[in-house]
Image (cartoon, rainbow, N blue to C red; front, side, top):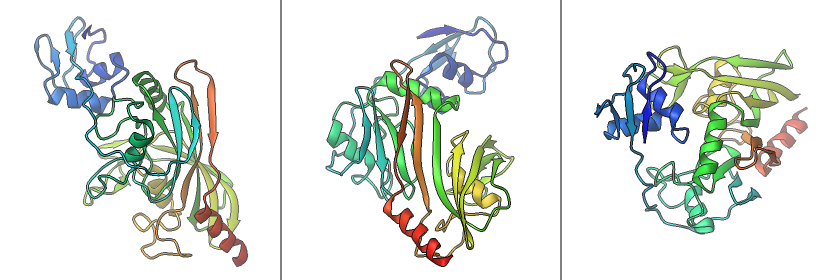
Length: 301
């Protein structure tokens, strides 16, 4: 595909992501590393500044055949049509294959249930996956059945029009009934597996929260994501002094109330249907582990 730059000074990776909506900026950068993007006939670099009229050629490789094992893993499908399926993921299930989890992930289950009915944009290890949630976070996850659906849903994530609402139990009590955390998130400088609030090499991150109910020493809150950074709610809540109950990475280092993983549930997902634009609103009720914690808190008074 050939394009011509029209905005002086625009970065090459930003331009490619703009004219090829099926690509994120990071995906465009990977293509550049592979030599699949040229500028005026020469290999392009991600931070090249463009001049109007520059000829940009982009070669998007054919999706690789998925080389992972399909496995019969029970899936809680809460919405499905010819373009999109929404899964209610249980706590403990990894979304896509990675070190230590090669054949027991959501993707393995999707391949068993749907075979070739998944988009290929995200590559061989993440077919159909538009966004993800942590292993120990439960709740709703949208999966694209074709590349059109993947492109449209990814664009809604990018422009923040896909609404994702989470339920969480956090430590401590809030004075206010609602609020917003607007703090950039980037990789932790000394622990590369963690994220942190930082001004260095970070991205904008905004989380809106409201109190559902207060308990002795804990609070049930509802969070709406305006952005979708890795571990965003967990990092933001810890940043304001209210880490999520059970989050041993960002919060207290010992289990409380029997919880050794975060009490965080993606309970509501709203998006425009990729084919006709109609609103799709999906709910997932609180899982049993979450209800049991609330019952304990009720008994505590």
